[in-house]
Image 1 (cartoon, helix red, strand yellow):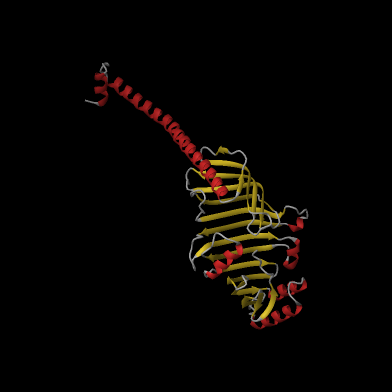
Image 2: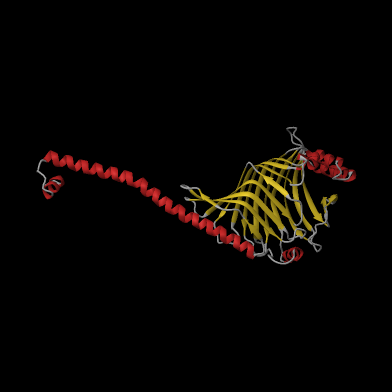
Length: 375
């Protein structure tokens, strides 16, 4: 006996083969339509509940983070928070963010503010936090000038972690970035960067010879302020840096004491790759730096240089090098340089040393660095 016939007999319907089959077909279609209509409603309901949970978690974690900063001695304030982002993300808009620690004239002073921050956790990547600053940001370090930042687009990405804990990694991307002194009205004092990408791996508790901070950074189409642009040209075509700062990194005490402790613990900065293209200069190199007994940088490295003669002439013309140092350096480099067969500019590989604040090339002093102060 067919299933349709058994259903008809059970409910007392007349037993007619065609009628029973038709009713069974209609019932199956009705179930299909109910399912098709209910599935989206169910998905919307689940998504709404998930969004509410993610929003509550995002807001509570941000509140815990603010509280942990205040416990650590920071002054922290924000405007009224706004929730949003449904259906694909949980977002928290934070207006008028202000953070400050230390007296403004001290080395450990830091002040930062932003017109607005948007915190975002995607519902498909719940363990990754995105932070998008909007409007203007201000940063002041160690009593230095108030720097103003604006960008066409900027975003910081990091893993979600407990409030107060440092992220294990951090990614920064920005386009049309502009940095200037907030008190300056002359546009020639501003830096602008068309594109910036940076990735940081953070392990501040790392022991000696292990990277506490590893960085990979690249920037294109950099326009330096006029005081720098006149050296080699108004645009730095590209800059790239890959390196690591070895630990351990002391997290308390005066800055000078922490620098000494880092030095005594075997701390060093290793730049595995540095690349710069600016006007006539094309430079790639690597260097390892540490701090000497006077807490001044010292180290050694190598550089591959194209356009060395034009670069040395320009630096001497603008007082960055003495004429005698420029002439001596060109003489040494000319002896070491390689002239390509295709007629392109000569290139040279040269060792560099930094000792007693003096940068030298094969025992030829180039220039003396200003003293680094820690107090």
